[in-house]
Amino acid sequence: MRLSVFFHGACFDGTASAALFARFHRDTILPGADLNTVGMRHRDGDPFADVPIDGDDNACVDFRYCADPRMRWWFDHHRTAFQPPALRERFVAAASPTAFFDPDAPSCAGLVARTTAAQFGWTPPPNLVELVRWADIIDAARFASAAEATSLAQPAQRLALWLGSADDAAINAYIAALVDGARLGELDAAPGIHPAIEALVASRAANQAAIAAAARPGDEVVVFDLADELGAPAIGFVGYQLFPHCRYTVSITRSAHAVKVGAGWNPWGPPRRHDVGALCEQHGGGGHAAVGGVTLEPGELARGRAVVAALAAALAVDTPPPP
Ligand SMILES: [Mn+2]
View 1 (cartoon, rainbow, N blue to C red):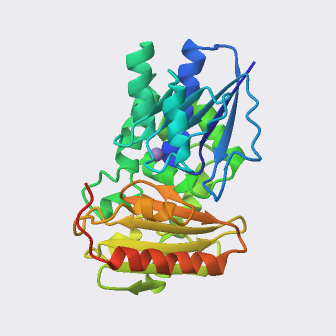
View 2: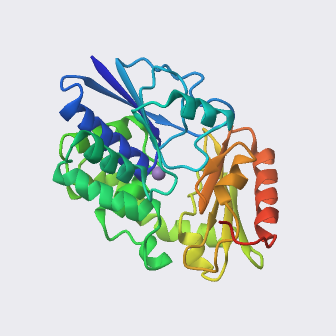
View 3: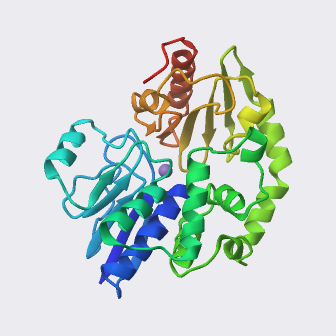
C-alpha cells in the first residue's frame, strides 16, 4: 500500500505539512503504507494535469484544492486555493469530511496539527511539535524585525533557506526523516544537508549585495529585477531589511525551470492596503493576503516583467485597507 502526499514544494510550511500529515496517517490510518511525497508548483491552468494521483490513499497539503475524487485528504490555508474560482463550489458541494480549508491559519502545518488533534485525537511526536511551532513563525513572518527574519541563527531558518534551492530527492528525504522523528537540529547537521546550507550561508553576503544592486525603489513599492542572471537568489525578507520604510516589494528571478515573480507586504513597514495574493491570482499565480507569487515557464521572461510592472502599478495605487 502507498500513501501519496502532494505538498507545496520548496517551502518550509509545505514540507512541514507533508511530514505532519504522513506521520498522522502512519500512526492512525494505514500503518504499513509506503510514503510517496510529490512537491507541487503553482502554475497556469491545472497544476495536477500531468501529475498522477495514484496512491492507495492521496493527500494534498498547503497547496490548491484538487477536485479529483482520488484526492481524499486536503488541507490548505491559501486564500487563492480555488483556481478557477468554480472549484470553491465543488469543494462546498463535496462536503468531504477529510478536506479542510482555513485561510486565517498562520501555517498549513498548524491547521493539520489542530485538525488531526480535534477530529482524530492524534498527538504529534516532539520533533513535529517543534516543526509546527516554526512553520507558524516562518509562514506568517512572526518575527520582531526584518533582521530577525533573515537571521540564520536557528536550524529552522537555515533549513527554510536550504529548502528554497534543494532538489526534489533531497527534499523528499528530508520529509521522510521528519516523519521518522528527526529534530530540526539533527537535520541541519546531517551530512546530506549541512554542506549545502554552509555554501548558502557563505554566499549570503554576495547575494544580499546582488539584491541591493537590483533594487528600483519607488515611493511605496520597491522592485527587484534579478532575472538577467540565471539562478539569482530569491529576495525573501532581505528587501525589507534594505528598505525598512517601503510598503511592498515586487521581484523577479529566473532559473532553468521557471521565471518567478514574487510580491509581498513589508510586515515591519506601513499598513497593508491590498490583498497581494488576489492580485497575483489575476496573473495566474496565488498566495496569501500579505504575500504571493506567479510562476511562469522559463521562456516567459518578457511576460514575467510585464507582470512585475502590473503588480508594482497596482500596489502603488492607494486603496482603502482590505477587510
Ligand atoms: Mn503555507
